[in-house]
Amino acid sequence: MAFYIAACNAPVKTEELRLLSSSSIKGEKIPVSERCYEEGILIDSILILKESCSESIFYAYNIYTNEEICKWGRLGRGSGEFNYPMFVSTLNRDTLTIYDSPTANLIQIPLRDIDRKKYLQTQRNLGSGMLFLYNFHLTDSLYIFTPIEADEGLFSIYNRKTEKVFHVPYKPDYEYNKEDRKDVYYHHLSISPKYKTILAAFQYLNLINFYNFDGELKKSYTLSHSPEENNYNLYITEETILQSIQTYSTNEKVYILWNGNPMKTEFVGTSKILVFSWQGDLEKVYELNNCPRFITIDEHSGNAFGAVFSEKTEMMEIQKYILN
Image (cartoon, rainbow, N blue to C red; front, side):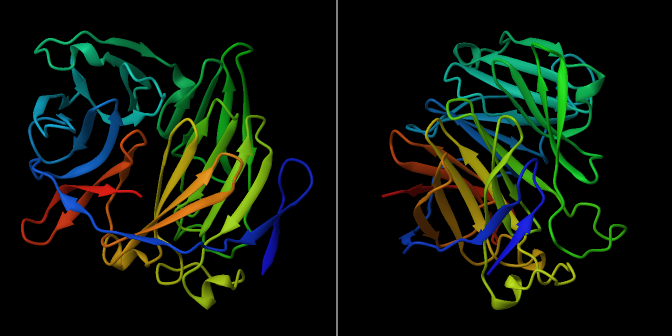
């Protein structure tokens, strides 16, 4: 089963991904306080979590001792406050980078200061062209981002040296009612400066695409859990489309957290971690015993960390997965 996409140059065939045999992995709860965790990033040995229902936004833990190192940040527009912050994966092992929407502020916090009550941080505004983003990545020469109000296009690439921006277009072969599903192209981005590759994983379209830094589509795969999801003329509904997909990347690998259940059962049941090389080759598949909201990976120890909903407390607990 295959269909074709109009990319920048010649069409690229989208192939159904053939999953490898999976290794079963059971999550183990670690003694970290349960909160409304929405996002997490692991930098060196520090697990930094963002949450939404307590006084502070950010919490930092040592992954070896599970000790809370510090907490900071409040919602607002004042000093040390945030609007809609998101972690930026820079692969820098010394600094935490945060993009704050819609103000387009880029905040950087040296990890050596993270346990101080008054940590030092740098902040700069990215300008009006970087407002209201839900994806943001930076390299030495590029900004790669997705505007919230983007319609027919996908993401944009801004060359910081030439100050020129290129919008990557994309129109998958699906039928949908734009008024009902304005989020139909919603996707997660991961990038590799080393391999000059961008991965876009679509939350609702059951697709993962690999692009180069010129915006050219190089490889495209479809994921599938049921025969009807292979019918690309289907009308898009919440019952028929893959819902939960999230990515995390390192220098050498990209990890896709995938739950093939529809939206009404999101974060319920089991999920998979698909491990790809930056050349677009599937290398490993892990089957988890639950559905974490996000994952972050420590490749040195072979451990993954994720936030899992607890029915007992109705909060998110942090679990560790040992990847073999």
